[in-house]
Length: 120
Image (cartoon, rainbow, N blue to C red):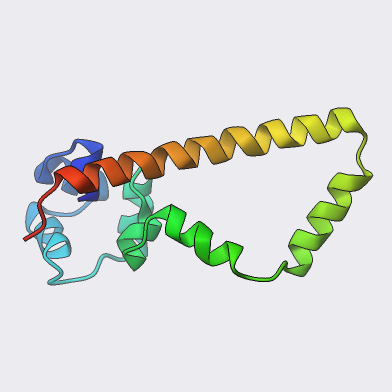
């Protein structure tokens, strides 16, 4: 589904991942598992590696993370943010929003593609 969402045929996606068409087919048909090097290469195409590895789109990952208590790193981030002057807070929010919006759009595209791809 992910390959189709990105608009690649199997041959071209295999090339992007540095594997043969047969190997790509084996990955897609759950005959074999890709290694980290392959996943890193296809990530450059915009492939949602988390979903490929776990079968969950990123918004499901977000829901899982939202259910967790704040970690010390998150608490420190909030504290640092609160100590910044308003113009810096505005900049930080803008950066985070732009990045999060890009990820939301990627998840939307993945979901839209999932609706159109028929899984055997």
